[in-house]
Length: 382
Image (cartoon, rainbow, N blue to C red; front, top):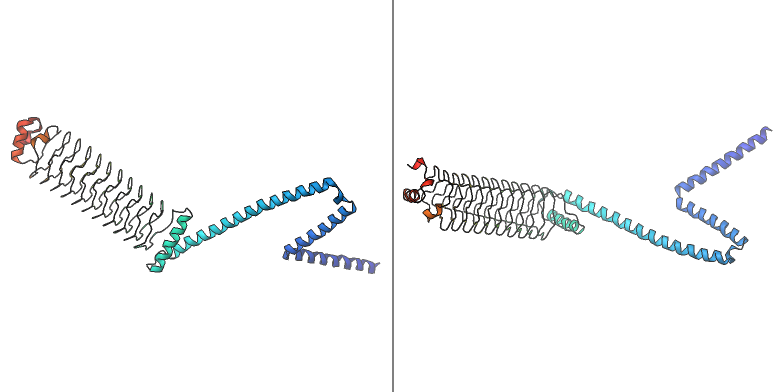
């Protein structure tokens, strides 16, 4: 009896070991296992079907053909889906590779690093990506025509002498960026943050700068002809000798800006804030400076031929030796303004002036004003 029990236990142990071995092989080689299972099931199904003469049944044949067509369709759809998912996965990996490579070369100032970063920017653009992180990248003299970097982080980037015409930098961060002598013709910089940026001698002809922030930026001798700067911020920025011919500066904040020698011929400065700005010897011929605030600005020696200052605040403005030929001062406030040595300033130009309180005017012109418009002459002149 004991011997029989031992044989039974040995048999159970043998089968248990065999079963565990089979499970191990199945787990370590799932493809072979699946193929074996499929083969066994196929043999069983075919054997039973042959025994029952199923294959000779017309209905079975029709159903089989229908199932085969359905299987082909399923495999086709599944194949396309798998191919698409595979391509998407490859695309994501490549995109990540380009981004990581930009990060690897970020602060290197070498020709190879610049070429690698430029190439990756173009590849990412082709993939529809533009909000890139290009902080502190050295891309001087880069050729990036019509590049799309809208919303990108370009903090402290070096793009000196770069070719960026037609580029899209909408809402990009360009704080303290170096764009000296860069070509930005027709570029979009709307709502971009360019505070503290260096744009000396940059070519920004017909660029879009509406609502951009250029506080403290250096645009000395930059070409801003026909640029749209409406509602932009240029407070305490440097625009010495800049070309702003025909520029749209409506509702622009130029408070404390340095515009000495700047050319604003035909510019629109409607409702602009030019308080405390330095416009020494600036050219404002045919400029529309309607409803603007120029309080305490310096326009010494400025060329104001045919400039329209209608409804503007000119309190405390220094107009010493400025040329007022054909200038319009109607409904403007000239309280405390300095008009000594002003050229081509006629008494008729004061016809609709709101106030001359505490203004400093040459004696001869003051006498003419007192005779023709006595209401403008306060007790300070008595």
